Image 1 (cartoon, one colour):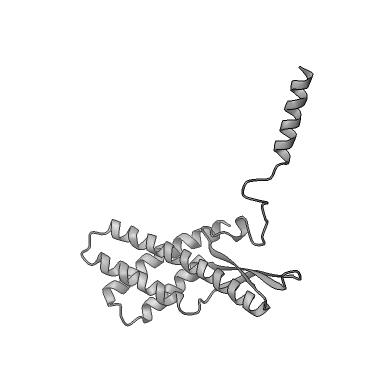
Image 2: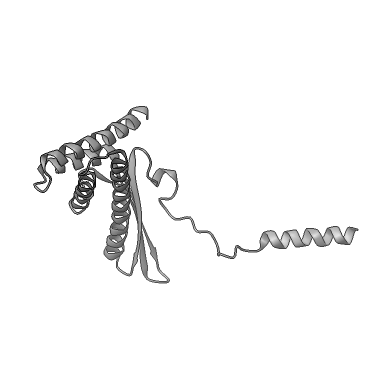
Length: 183
């Protein structure tokens, strides 16, 4: 009986010491809740690697901003789809298309309230390589206010569509402002 217990103990010990089939888990900077989007912020992180630090930084910057743009685009698509579902207006699809087009235009311009919330640079001497991690955030209410401002000046949107888009944006601003007030 002792030998069975000893054998079982050795087997458990070896199983505990063995590595994961995926390899060793790596903890990178800017992970966790503080760097994830929530009801108040769109957040994005990026990682860039290169033998030149400025190129690694540019890659990290681009990846973080692309992640942010994707989140904003997804959120706006959900809002537009929700509008389409709630509206039986024959021009609802037209308004939703204009709204999404407006977002693409905004994402192609400089975003007014984009804030860098972190940047870390590492140098691997063995590989002669820089790795840069970057994190950005945009307050949702500021993003929607910027969208509203752009909608007012967009010449491709007629007055009725502009009113509807502004109404949609105002509802999203109210939600974001309520989140800010509760925190």
